[in-house]
Amino acid sequence: MSDQRPRTGIVQFTSDRGLPPQRLAPLIEAAGFASYFVPEHGHIPTRRDAAHPGTGTAELPDERYLRTLDPWTTLAAAAAVTERIELATAVALPVQADPITLAKTIATVDHLSGGRVTLGVGFGWNLDELADHNVPAGRRRTMLREYLEAMRALWRDEEAQYEGEFVSFGPSWAWPKPPGAVPVLVGAGATEKNFTWIAKNADGWITTPQDRGITDAARRLAEVWREHGRAGAPRIVALDGRPDRDRLARWGGAGVTDVLYPAVDSDEAAAAAHLARLSEAVAAEPV
Image 1 (cartoon, rainbow, N blue to C red):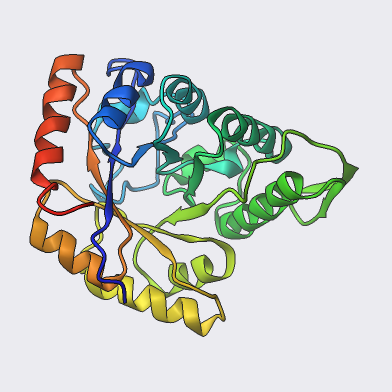
Image 2: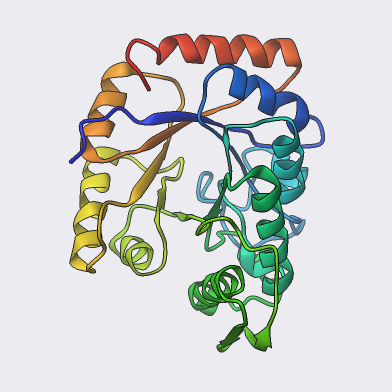
């Protein structure tokens, strides 16, 4: 396993009440962080049977679930005012969109940003939200796999086509093409089923706030990765609350490549001060 310390980035739970991306993203870049991640929820049904993974009930832990900004508009705004940082989702819900249109949107943001987009995806815990998009709960993994395969074909092939259960289109032209393969990370719990799915279909893993034992989980994912004949190592993005240098070193030794810290986005001064404190806390060694 690698003994490198992970890169550090920032995740913002966006909302229409928080600091907008065109003001926060430059602060993230100026503070020396490597990445900017944002989530997606198109809507939240007021009545839900699905339990939130954090609360275990229909109760939501944060009203920002109701107010989340569109991730691709957000990342486009961030792209326009930054030059270096990775622009990513944690996580997007591709199956709630049309795959051809979504492929175009992602490719456009990647083109305009100079190839800085990473697609973090989830299967979707909110089955009621998925149902409003005609996503069968028992088929959401298959549907996501097909969406990713179809979008990759559109990004890669001069004449793309795809035939599946949920996505089907004949030979088609679609530009712009991303300058390189768009990395795909899966945000999901640390289970054998999820790790197998990642090894078969994605480039890495994003932990969930509920995951514990990240060190052991990262090592297990690397084993599953090799068992499925994948070369190299998976990218592993761990969510963390506050910096701990020993934990960063331990996670890096287990194969964690990136660690994300939550943004403070009440106002620009508070955001900048928070980023400065975070940067100082992780700067004992190169990150």
